[in-house]
Image (cartoon, helix red, strand yellow):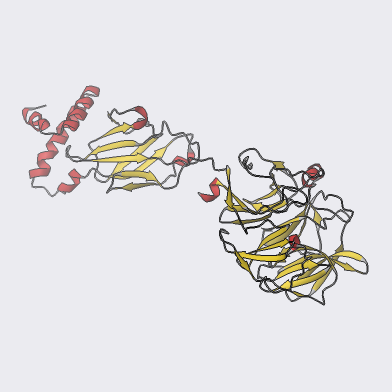
Length: 468
């Protein structure tokens, strides 16, 4: 080793002396490395060559990459290196349940390195010399101590691999707001129009109107005039542009602001309002309805200008009251769905129906799934690219708390397990209005029994991954 090199070895830091000693025991070839490092020190400190002295004191990490044959997402994971605070971390968390106990870590340095020591919290407090290729356990933070070429300068980093700590497909429910209006009405309908939330309620003392904005946590009484007391609240519909429509005694009423209502005298007799269709590349926004002409019932659609189009005759098994509706878009076309409720013969409807123009409707639900739809006043809403169906009064008048999902807009259905189920404290209900906002699903009011009053509350749920 030589007296001069031994002398220089004694001036090294204790940590680096330990590192060199361990490497010498492991491989005699490290003698050459030690000699090289020691020779660099006087050259850097007092030599006359043009080498940048600071480079030999730079122990900073330039890049940090993890990999594992069975975890493909690791190879593309981006790590942030905080040079000031010595932190290494990934801003985009790995999927829930990812196991990173033995992964390969690849590091590059700004000016090279003469050695690295690591301490893996998952394995205890011991610090080891790391050869750069042995796998490491990142289930808990790992500390890296990197040494510059001068053998004295060093830098300490703590590397943390962030993993989602919640199951991404789990749905979290909460009682979001109670009380809602301060009283429990007999009927309630909440809808969104022109960016505003409007709630209509019916009680023995008449109709009321409340308004709110998202996230629907503050509601205030608002003006309401001209809407008949016998208006069918659960059929009130609103065009996206803001105009609303209501039905009372087969007469159609309209409002530009949801507050002041007036009758449309020139409208045909309307048996039921089915909802609204958004404008798309083939049509303007439309109001869909069941209209009467020459004693027969037909599907009808009215545009914003008040012009009606008469369509096909209404089938006997089409829902006409206490049904639920939902909307969706597919490949540039807007669709309206209706399902549940009771048909012309007062039988429970057993299918989801769909339309793209309001004048022609198609029965969608396959025969073997029809029993899922046989309920009155269910909750039907599109959320997370799926159609959700829950609640409603079944043939025996009870309310089912099961949540059913359809990936194909009502054709087929399946019940889901506890990952999205309601909590025990949730009371199953019918007649609740549903809406979505910012990754959340909102349920407004609802009845727990036929003839009961509405619950004065809002429930809200979200699937975890939609808020990541």
